[in-house]
Image 1 (tube, rainbow, N blue to C red):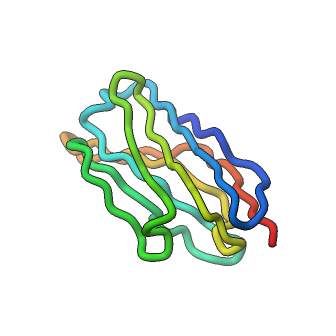
Image 2 (tube, rainbow, N blue to C red; image 1 turned 45 degrees about the vertical axis):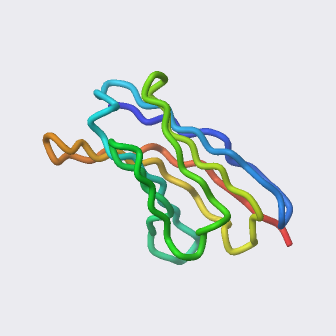
Length: 116
């Protein structure tokens, strides 16, 4: 199983980025997909999650700014991030949870840096 995240980078506050995570070696439609992030010195936290049925949920700090979506035909989950703030700076990790076997998987992380 491999989760390949991409799309991170350096952006100014107020800017936008789109993260992508392509899954391989899994039956994608059986996986809830999510994005977590970990800032320096902080614990990893859930940013957004989308269920196998396409229902999203978000942590309060990103509601109205971030949008998670999935394309089951491409085995890919996206995180559209708008109105970025310096506090969004973190390594973002893609996560998959197979609902049939209750097993989860992690991607390698992609760095998002938001400058003020």
